[in-house]
Image 1 (cartoon, rainbow, N blue to C red):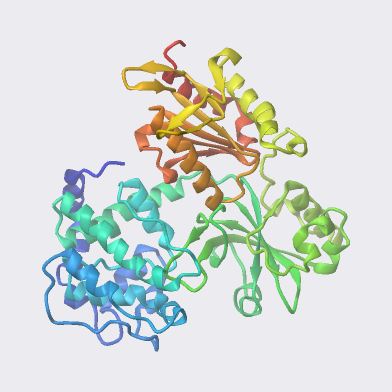
Image 2: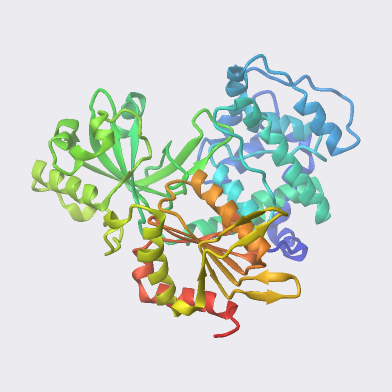
Length: 491
């Protein structure tokens, strides 16, 4: 979505000035306890979470900055000074991560031209979505074990917001009104309207402390909790809640109401928001250990140590429902979410990448309307002076004034189990797409298909994802054939 200044102006004229005025007086946003009453009301309202503003109150965390009354002459001066903060050890930076929202407000109060108030603790996925939708370039989040780099990732956010603000000639308070008013409203609509049919099933773990609070309290359709999760989780996915010691059992089934995401400013980086809980008859570890389906699962063999966020198969979910019914014949299984649609293909026959090419990729191309003569396999592409590589499949191969080009690039992999691997494979496919001036690059594995368009600059976050079960739906294939075919001059 391209940013249009006149849309923001319309928003400000139709009530958005109330948000802007909140940030017009940066020093008035904070008081001795953390935030002003006016800001506290706003914070609790933007996510409809009463008491949300409590996370901005003073704490015993170390305060890492020695503030200077001097005014910076440029963003680089500001960034250099903040990045010069010294930590004694990685653990000290980790202790300060959750203080970033409060620290950011103090920095905004003093340096509104350069500092950005980060108002979304534990909701980083919302800021990430806003940046993706409006082409605000955030760099990749540092590794989870580098807490010092993750702490200073805040400066990267400030840089991205500063560059966006200068590019579009916005004041600091207009930028804040745009992010937390205009863009927040649009992104909430995007999240609420996303397809909520489950694609996958995941196990999430509840600690003994979790069990004392949410899990052993009252659960209803409005209950929302945040758990450790994985970035592969999508809104609508099924979450099987395993309660660790002392109960060692499955006690409830939840639904993901946010995507899984990495939060750079929290102790536990991987997160997912879960809702719509259904309490089930307690299924003990001994029950699943005795089940012929579950007993073969590696996590069960490891006595459910680790593995939070690991995926479960449809067969395992159906086996769990069978155990539940056996434990309590009166329990209505219709209260549980339906299993994800399962592809009819037998994935057990896939052992190497060539199997994916023959059994998944080529049938996919044929279903799109291409013919075998339309694609070229393993074409040698020169990279640099002495190196060459071979993309798996090219369609629309030909020559132009700029050299060899191909309209479509397809890269087959046996498995792409997580986002880290997908980023790596995406980089390889995009490199081919750039050299060959391609319109679309596509990754194919037994997990599904990911499509990236040049119009989006092959943006990783703007890729379109489909499972093989979804690709068996005729309307989906009609939509995709309309996407691919215009890129082929001969058709």
